[in-house]
Image (cartoon, rainbow, N blue to C red):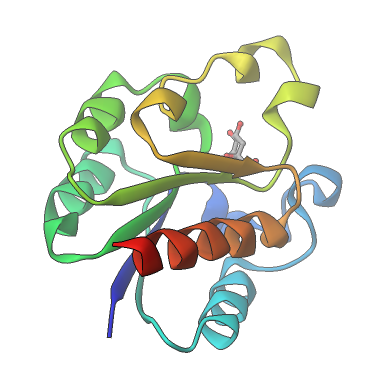
Length: 143
Ligand code: DQA
């Protein structure tokens, strides 16, 4: 069974308390269950942290996975360290955002992650994660 790591960054443990217009009205656990139930052919590990260093440590462990889905939260706009960790990781990597970064504040248009991942999906709340998994499924079939 192919192994998929799903990393969620800061404040994503607070979904449902956060603004539903941008982030939808599901908890992170509900989104994780949705992914697991929709893509039963994969073995998932889910990880959430509010700490940049813990996220980097987890990316370093991701060598043993077949693909990584990551929502780096606000670190998307600031973290060269997470970018560097992603850049050196030789597996399929997909960035996800619940909200549409292009339709929000100017500072969310700065993205230091997108050019070191294979694809980005955003703006469709939990559906963005499912689109990322569809992309990974197709890509793994081609390998
Ligand atoms: C987010 C978008 C980021 O700008 C924000 O800081 C988040 C969540 C999203 O999923 O839409 O925490 O990554």
